[in-house]
Length: 90
Ligand SMILES: [Zn+2]
Image (cartoon, rainbow, N blue to C red):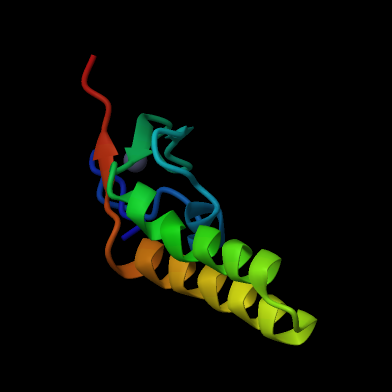
């Protein structure tokens, strides 16, 4: 789901997309128009937050690190397959 809503080509790399928060405006690397991650990106970030929360509460560091890594991975997957890029209409 990194397709640009204007030109329908890859607006950015998957990695860059997964690091994109909700409401972050970026220019399409192909046509240069402004696109933004859909507001559902907020939910995509939740697993990562949850992982951080588990790490703070967990007594075992490896378990906490695994929770964070897992959360970030899930966030990346959600961004890749679920969260679309949308236009910014002036
Ligand atoms: Zn474009």
